[in-house]
Image 1 (cartoon, rainbow, N blue to C red):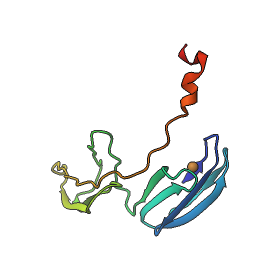
Image 2 (cartoon, rainbow, N blue to C red):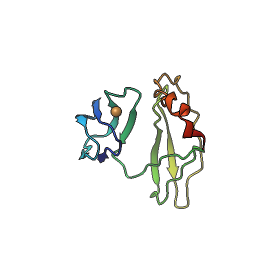
Image 3 (cartoon, rainbow, N blue to C red):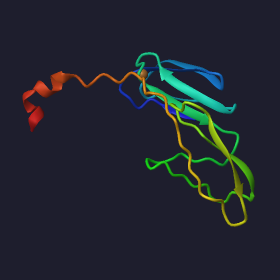
Length: 140
Ligand SMILES: [Cu+2]
């Protein structure tokens, strides 16, 4: 995975996660380091300069996965018939959520998960400087 810094400021990108520990100290704009994630697991990526910044890399040992859009629905196509374990991951998931799914020659029965999420306690990014709204030309 490539980590291009397209910002105008430095970041100090790191992960202390069991699946991959790494650090890009004082990561300058225009830099683009690469990392190979070679162990399954969730890698939480943070920035020690901007502590509200977080990203999650979910490394899977399967080609069968989907990232859900806003409506939360996902479809996996071309799954060979068989028994599978479907599992959901979400950063605020309160407990592990999985179920067995049987795929026949034709399809699998649609199903849904009910997720119980923990409260979102992340710090928010500071609001943009209020000074910009006081400039005379900012209204037009
Ligand atoms: Cu940062």
